[in-house]
Length: 256
Image (cartoon, rainbow, N blue to C red; front, side, top):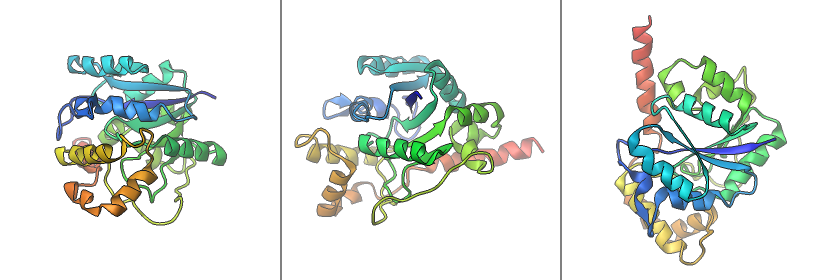
């Protein structure tokens, strides 16, 4: 069974353009993220799936420089981009990651992959009590293939796994939590300049001490310095999904 991590990444972010190329302790955000993801032990291949637009030439070159595979496809139809990237990589199992989650923890990635295989599911994701920004989704190529062929709503074409999650009668899934406490309200992805300032502070505090710092190291740091959370206390990391769901309403009205 071939397990392939596919990372969607593009420079055309609306709220923080070019965020994946912004320097973080001297290296682009995407490079820092790949540095962390490559430590995961349960992945057979890593692919950066970027767009075919000229402005993402830099994204593709950076990914190659970091030693991972590159696939280029539609900017708007992210589901199609993912499906074709998975097909080209001969993936049996797909691990979906996003390039704005620079604090991705390889241990968490492995944890979710193990859950997927251990429970023999079609789809699973990060424990519900983990911080946003560690988002890891694992699903079968079969599920991705059906989604790519049948999904019609704009939100389902933009958000790769939404069709799968919208059809629990078709795909086995099982929400879960791990450990004690609930940190799900913490927002660790980079969507705005304030988010970038937050992760920069995290890296400045932890990276010089331990380049392989984990989510638990971040949680300990935030417990000692809760004022860091005030740097970006607005936003959830899921604003893009809310916007695309609004597009669904327009789509429905147009097709009535």
